[in-house]
Length: 415
Image 1 (cartoon, one colour):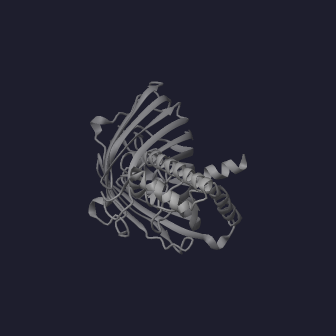
Image 2 (tube, helix red, strand yellow):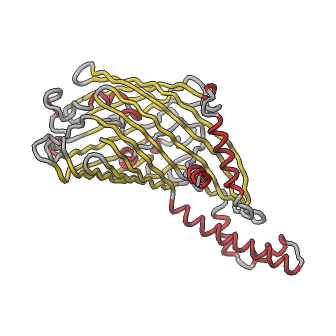
Image 3 (tube, helix red, strand yellow):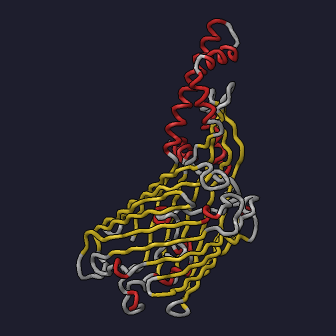
């Protein structure tokens, strides 16, 4: 049982092409194209812009901010989340190719043994008889089979928030080859992050936030397992898992970082945001982290919002994300995130200013770096939330070169 859990955790995986900072995946944000730096009206302020913590219990609060009392009120957030994701279309198609390859190799091996021939010669003859398989193998050469897992514990209320979260990653890819196909673990790493921050509203229009974080990353690169003895990957991944566990208390591997952010309410329905995140003071497991500078605007039209027992929230947001990172996605469009969301309370106890709601639905859509994104969230009794999002990430150097579509689901408990 323990062995199975180890392998399951190790194979819930994600990919990192360069020295990226630990990345928290917000389902709400990803579903609307990850345009969130100026929206931040709940716990997501912890990850996108700490200045947004000043909005919790103010938006929708007639006493604190009467000019914006039409927003559904958000008193605070305390959540435990567990989610997983991956490009499932790639999984299924690549699995079918790998299954066909394995069948062919086993047949060639059996034929060679029966007739006392060279396995490689029989294999080449078999491949020659199946040109369609060679075409499939070539199309999946160096094809990444990525997955993601996230676990979060979050707490946020007016002017304060913090979170502890883990992102476990491994990036296997399939090398089809013509003689010995193999599965290669390009990078395996586990990120653990604890962060806390605060915000202060200097005026009704302007607020600023600051946060501190500690992060640890353990990674191992380049593990090779051939298709013929692919079961050995289980032992390999378990060894790497124990390496991570043994070094969890190694303080030399911990890096400290800082996040900064500001918000400005330029008009009653328009908010501007700017954040500088992931300012790490030393390398993270040998990786030099580039800070993330993101600027954005959020528009929340009054006529679409409703602050009653059956509250409704509507937002449209645009971000220019990760402005100084040119390692990947250096084209202008790759930095543009755009999205919109509508959240509607479907069942509630009327007259309690949205404090007691039984069922709420959120629908979202947008574009992240030029690729479509969408998702939904369903909240039951304010305590259970099921969320889903899909978006795409660029595996190449510019939008449109090599798209990888991700599908992520998450279950949350809390209020």
